[in-house]
Length: 230
Image (tube, rainbow, N blue to C red; front, side):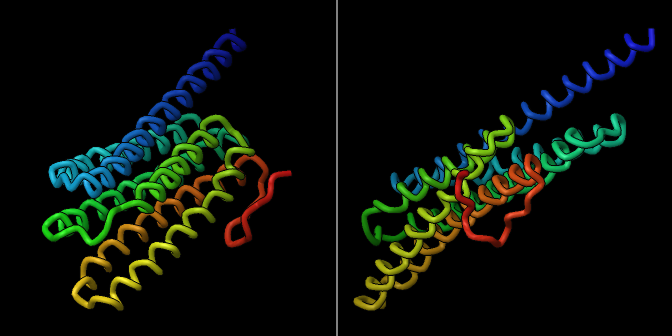
């Protein structure tokens, strides 16, 4: 009888962990959609899309609270140990990073609303490319956590260099605009903010990947050079 009860406890706990993964997956999808729509609002000059992203951030915030409360309930009621404990505590930290990425998407939309009221400074070529990389990093970082995939986590840490390169390239180009025509400074600074927000999103994706590596291998690689795959 005791074995039956113990088996039931383990089974329900497994279901709880699956539910936690599903909640994080949904939050990740919300954030990825916010990133994509934020830059779409810029490239297509559609302020209504930007306004919707800003409004929908309330959903991301509510989901963050919901996930945190769910994790705390699991810690209190299930009292997990070892691997399960690391998984839940890592989930709490990743939940925070996802919410912050959502905030970056809102920040982009706030600048987009300002930029859409003025003539377009230049064709947006590099920003969409930078967005694709950052958005994919967020997706792969979360996938690495949910699937406990060390190789994918390592890939995310390496991809951050691509985002940094785009940021440097965009900065140099905007600096040329500002030097040639001081009247472009305000718009150029706003565009630079967009690139910086994308770079910060990528940094949060790297944070998630580093948490995965710590959870799986017990190694803290923060502040170190990108980890090379073995």
